Image (tube, rainbow, N blue to C red; front, top):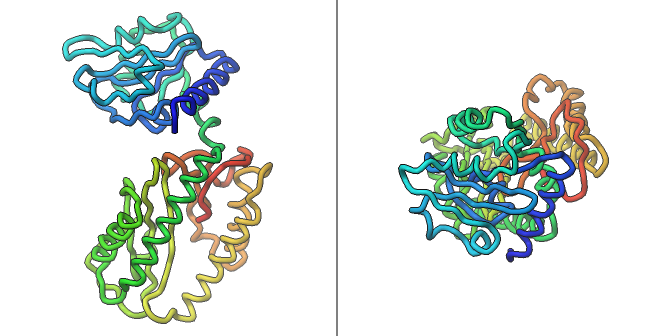
Length: 328
């Protein structure tokens, strides 16, 4: 993505800020900052962040990280280094257009940093930066869709390679390690989680920790995994069987598959996020298993593995064209 791509995103952020009366937006190194600038970094005790105002933009960073700045930041923002022993929060507060304005702050900022800022700015009003960033990120553009689709296709290639390697007789840990290897060979960077390989009764735990249990003939195997391509996430869950599935498993699998398809049909622009969840939940409840459906239907996928929208009961947020999410 070129510089013009990121600048257009920042202008859209400014439009939202104007509409909401927000004087400035401060983002620390998270996926939101990457979305606006292409900069990747990590949150630490040395303050790093972008301050976006209507008229200017500033990037504060530790002087020791000079080499990590990308060209887009150097060209578009006033980059201000700070050295150990200096007080970067004082620099930041001095860049605000007014001290009694409305400042939107990244919710993932360190609590201690935010508390210190609030002490320095007692007259400032505070807002979660999600008000600005979530609407921008929720609807993916064509390039984002391409990257998401490619990530998911490559995850599928990795899973097929695992199937060819075989599951029966392997331990969960061995299968998980092999899947990681297969995904890397398919061109995916590692995900920040998983993969989860849960065989037999372990499959009842969606967030099972891989064990040395051996996968035996007849075991259902819950496989939940992902990876990253071009910064965008893949998230895939499949449940093959080692050998032949039992009649009971086929019955349950059929119910879940029907619910998955019902949710898929219910997901369309203009409906509330809870509608697909309700469609799947109603089918599973009619089959007598509603009490076991203890989680939401799905979540948004993009730069983060979990992001807006969330398809869950009680969510009146409207599904819009370009939103990407899981149907679990």
